[in-house]
Image 1 (cartoon, one colour):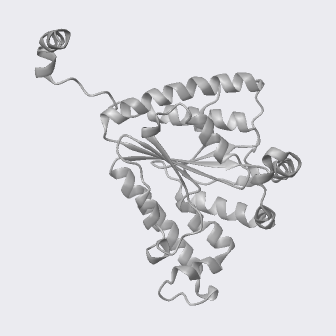
Image 2 (tube, rainbow, N blue to C red):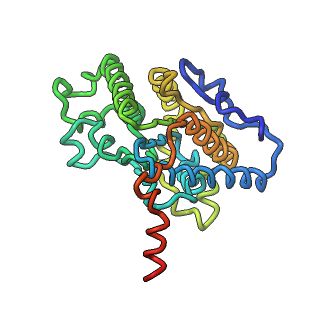
Image 3 (tube, one colour):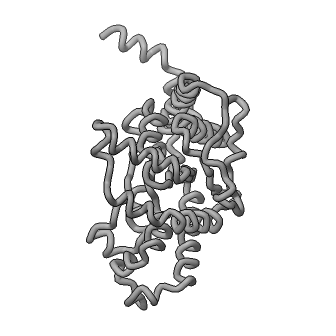
Length: 292
């Protein structure tokens, strides 16, 4: 596991998802994977404390993947050591009536992390070029000028959205938000098995939705649109990371390791120095407190 290199999962140009592995062959027990992840999560939680004090960067973690790809459990395990004040999770569902009165990126701007904090988008702004491409009729709810029917949604419309998303990410990174984007690459067979477990194991029954099966029927469309979205928005400055997701424990470790190693590039993130005047009078302040 020590040989895992985050660059092996990085996409900065083009990728063919059909040729990208969904499972990484690594000889390691689940216990070892969990131990490795534990080590990474401890370092990340310490880093977040320093970030909070530094107060100049926010970190946006974007998680995309098909149903059952493990987004929820990854969030739980990778970020479990964080101080609750330093991380917030946003799950973007179908836009509500208020959100539909604004442009599609508005609600994502509102959810961006404050300086010194992490925000996790569990499903992201990319839903606007994924679900809406599989179901273009959803676009009609946005009440856009010139879009009266599905036939009005041309290829140029989607090209424009890709450009808008690139500009959105460029804008926020230039203003102090570190963006890390992960696609949890799950095989169709593994999804079938996970859906079966939801039906067979009582404690997981609540997770099953007939909607999962309906969306599964569109598997090939989703893979095509995921690939198109990644290829149109992966850059050297803001890459995608395509993570083999058939092995949940390994996927969590890889994501945690990538976050940690990427954050090490920001060498300016340090705890602030104590004010010189305060430092010069430490002994006096200690004496004052001791005399209370």
